[in-house]
Structures are given as C-alpha cells and as structure tokens.
Image: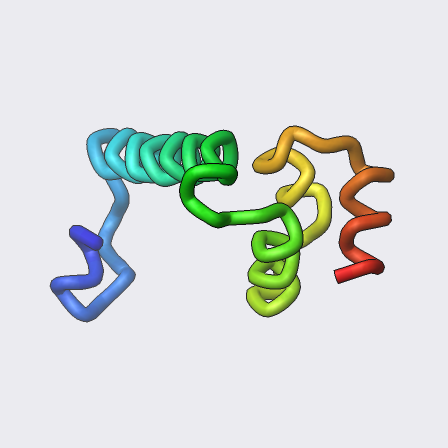
Length: 81
C-alpha cells in the first residue's frame, strides 16, 4: 500500500514494509479464524466459506488451513458445495 501511492512499483521494498505486510496478513488471518471458530453465533458455515473460496479460486489447501480440516475433509466438502 505504501508503494502503490506512488503509482509505480519500481521502488525498493524495505524491511519495515515487509514487516507491515506480514502483520496485516496475520491480523486478517486471525480475524478470519475467529470468525470461523464462532460460526454458530455469526451464521458463517463451512459450506459458505468453501463457496466463497471457490468463487475466489482459492486452493483447497488454504481452505483446510483456515478451517482446521484435513485435505480429505476439505475435498469432500468441496465436492458437495
């Protein structure tokens, strides 16, 4: 985001930018995992997540990491959704 304001991506990326990017990814991942763990109260279900992942062309492996499921379990849900 810092480099996009210049409208060029030719600038060098420094350590601070990389750390910020990692922190942002961790923040969103933790929030997503919290949302998943509270799916009963928020109305978010595994099938909804899988359908969203399919729509965004996310790999099954990533869905498995987020949901905490094995690759086989994700595959079965993937084919049903």
